[in-house]
Image (cartoon, rainbow, N blue to C red; front, side, top):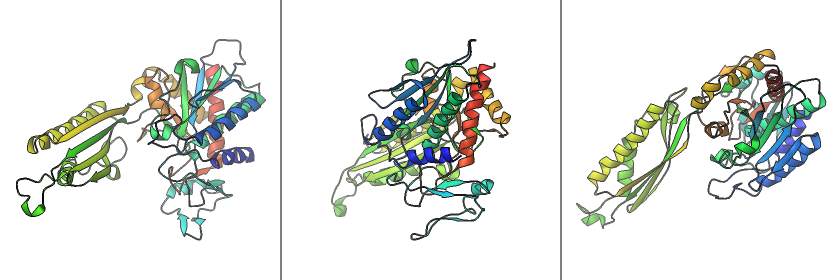
Length: 407
């Protein structure tokens, strides 16, 4: 288990935060540092055909050790971390034999990981937990997934009696800003299907995610002296507020769960002459998703008629529900489910309230369910990962390889 801890810490202490404002791939130069480290490590443990392209996409192969024909499968994780919270100077803390009490992350700043507020902690009593120091995120999303894939491949190399087909692995940049699969070469990867190791708590197995779009609403107003503004002023801020008020008020992230979709206004900027609303639209059901986009269009049309076409709307689809592509090859989910059951894990099959590289890859021809990596509270200072969950994820990967070779 110490081997997993050491490997994980060697990854998370490298800052790989991505940048949504950058147009390069990877979006930050610092992602190259971990990328090159991973290439060296993959070669050192004995993987074949280790490559890194001009956009920092890493691929490698573990050749089959069986003579009969076996499907080529893959495992994928991303090495960038979220721009939502600092990833600079990550200082992990190791809590051995966790006792169920609150964990003091930072005594000086009174930052506490509370087991009463984050009650998932209580299922890990007696285990070893890695936390932040309260000033950064941890990076278990998705450096735990990378740790697990590398460790599983190393285990298979050192234990040739475990039979498996050809295994492909890949590590990608910029997943956290929605671009992780944009320049992924599915043909070069050469797998029939793959699994992203990018889920949360132990047991998670996901093959359904949101349909996703972004919407940008730009409003042009007219500024007039407020004392003489009657019938002349067009206040873009007021119009923006009216548009937001017309959205279903309970269909927002903080009031929805499960398969419930939402509108999320995440940015509002404005003054009298110009205002901009930026939002995301999410729904698992395609018909509901389309209706949500139609509602935005109808609201904008309504206020364009009232204010002389002063509003423009841009809607961009971001990704779609991979269920459509995974269900026709559902045995790939069943293999992962059985792998978990075989090592004593109860699978938690649920829909993702978000997206993964796997959702985009599935529509690019690589069906790609998502498996737990073990972390909790991603993208913030309360992030943590139980080491035993990472160990179990390694075992799941190994067992999937075995089961695929024995089908």
